[in-house]
Structures are given as C-alpha cells and as structure tokens.
Length: 228
Length: 164
Image 1 (tube, each protein chain N blue to C red):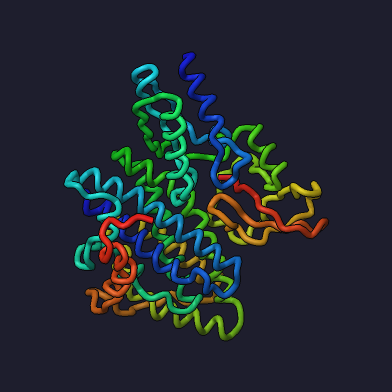
Image 2: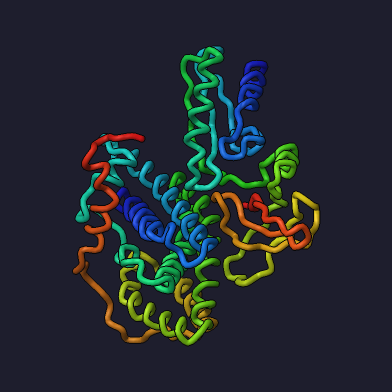
C-alpha cells in the first residue's frame, strides 16, 4: 500500500519538476504560467501523498525526507514522467498522455475504501480536469497547426509512445479502455496516428531520473535540513 | 458556543496573505472549530483550496500565532481534505470584496467536463467597468485560483477567481 502511494506521489513530483523546467522559458507568457500552475498542482498533490505515506511508514520519514533524500533506485515513478521535456510539443503530449491516465485513475481512487486516499483523489481530480483539457487542446492545436508543428508532434509521438505501457502497468482494463478512448478521440482531432506494434521500453536504461534528482535534491543534501 | 463565536471572530481578523481584502473566513477554508480545553487547547480544521497553494502554510502559521496571542497554549491545526474545497463555500461578502478589489468573483461552480474542448469561456463581468464584453486570455492566471481575462470595452486586463 505504501509503495503504491509512493508511486503516485513520485509520478506527481517528477512530472511537476520536469514541467517546472519551462518556467521562465515558455514560448509565450500565458502558457509558461499555465504549465507552471500545472506543476504547482502536481507538486501539491505529491505533498499530500507523501504526507500520507510518511504517516503509514511511521519511521520518522517526512514529506521532505521522502522527496529529497531518497536515491533514484528508491523512486517508484513511471518512465514517462522522467523523460526530458523536449520541445513544447513533446511536453504537451507527455502531459496529455499522463493526464488522460491520471483523470480516470483519480476517478477510481475517489471511491477507494481508504478514506485518506479517496480524499486526496477527489481533490486532485478537480485540478486534473484542467490539466487534461489544457493538454488535449494543445495537442490538437499543434497537430492541426502548421506542417512544422504537425511534424514535430509526430516526432513527439514516436519519442514518447514506448513509455505508455509502463505508464499503464497498474491500470485495470477499465482504466486502460478509458485512456485509449481519450487518446483516439484527441489524436483523431489532431490528425495524429496512434502507433501500432511499436516496441515498448521495459527497463530504465538511462540516467534521466538520476540527473533530475541530482538537480532537485542537491541543495537539501548539501545543507541537510536547511530552511529558507 | 460563546467561546467558539469568540474564536471565529478572531479568525475573521486574519487576512488571506495573497488577497488581503479577504479574511480567511470569507474563503470557506475554516471547516470546524473544536474547543478541547476551554481557554487553553483547541483544534481548528482547515481545508486547502488548490493542492499546491503555498498560502495554506502561511495561513496555518497566522492562525496559530493569533490564537496564541489570545492566550491559547495549544493550537492544533488539522488539514481536512474531504469534502474537497469549492468556491461555493466563499461568502457573498467575500465575493463583493473581491469585485471591489478588482478581481472578478466566482459564479456558481459547474462540474467541468474535460471532454468538452475549446468550449466557450464562462462569461465574466469586468470588475472595473462592469461590461460583459470580456475575453478569456488564459485559464491559468497569476495564482492557482485565478484565470486571466481582458475587457474589450475598457481594454483593461483583470483576474477572475475561478469557479472550482
């Protein structure tokens, strides 16, 4: 159970961090702010989940020690969220693939027998609604935009698709169906093709997560318990 | 009862750190006041607005500080996530204060459907000139709770406190 909560928390934190790499560097101001707000929502969800995990562990762990002091081997996030941000199209596509999964997932968890998890899911669901709409609209805009944007979106699909099986590894059939339906609908509107028979990534072979954590954690690890 | 009333009026004096015209009681984030030992120990249940809102920690700190100033030795602040906070809990008074401050207040919240893409934005009245001829610039504004609009009549941009 605790491992599952950590998996949910790590997904949210790592994606929140990846998205925040755009802050100050977005293509236009309003979308820079939009993605930063999405990051903030995700990090907030991660906080709630880490707080709950710390409670369950009951071994002195805190939300901060779980986020900042675990090494890459201990993180339980899916591979999709740790992939580099790529270009803007890669980022919005990754957000879409993830939000299309997170939305039905939180719908399911909202009725969990675990009251705390249900509460976190119900609250997060409201925010994920915005994330899903925002990313769906952007996938469509860029897919239908210019020849350049369309080509870049095609490339983004090729880059990220191998991580979709791993994204859905804990999903039941109902969730997988909902994800696929959302995908087919938005891809059709974006004139993008859903890949068939593309080999899936099975093992983490890159240093993406380690690199991300070394950037995110270095301050806390260098100056333990520092506050500002 | 009398003590709970007194505590509520203390809480009413604490402003929201981001939008100081609002008291924290206007936001609907105070869910319960529980006096454990009269005059000494109490519990305040609060609920965060958006998951990532950084103000909740500051608000908790201010609640504790203010109540300890009033003589309470032990102030327990509990975060209650369910039921999820909604702008429906904002007071009418709070909504009017927002408008006077230049932020368009939330209307009644409608359950948002993520499959309805490129939908027409909720019509929002300009808090400066009262025109309804306004345009959404971005659903994500300066903070998690706000979206950004522009008035086509007076040409001023303004924040809208989102229905949530």
